[in-house]
Image (cartoon, rainbow, N blue to C red; front, side):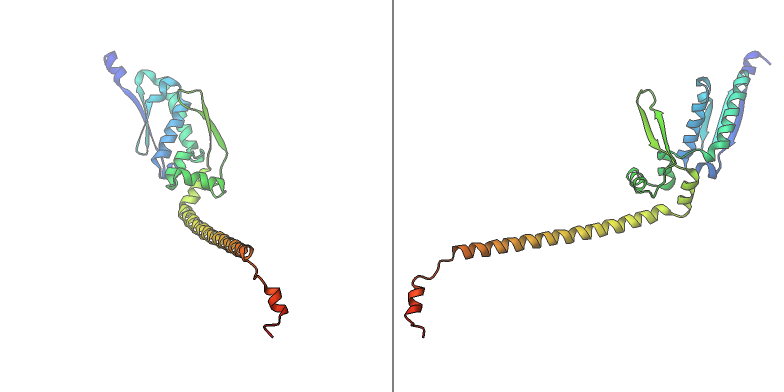
Length: 208
């Protein structure tokens, strides 16, 4: 076989990501790909691609040593995948929640944090820190439909808050009206003129 044809032959290996690994989320699968790429040397990062739920590693036959090393990294990461923490964009996709909901439920304790993670933004010096989540906890929330329950709770709490606010506003208006009424009465009392000659009229006994 000519040398150039031999170099064209590819070394290929494929891994299928289970539903337990991705929790039904392509965003989670893509996050796993990024985790794998972060563990690989720069020259091997683009050798791994994601298609649906399959990860494929491919390299020229001449890179046999690099292929074996990369295969070991991918295999180990896939093996650990089910225990890897869930990051914000993944949990939002898995549970179908909005960013504002994630912040609210994290703040009130309904969405338990598994700690924080700090990363550097690509091409920038600035680092960002965010909460990550236990995949088992996320799976439990998904299975029992907790998100819909929380939305109902929030809607009820919002309605109750609105009702209380309306009552307080009505009470405040009533108090202000009472104060205005009393002020008017006081002004009327202050401006009322006494009857002139009443004392003399009473002494003369004209009413007896």
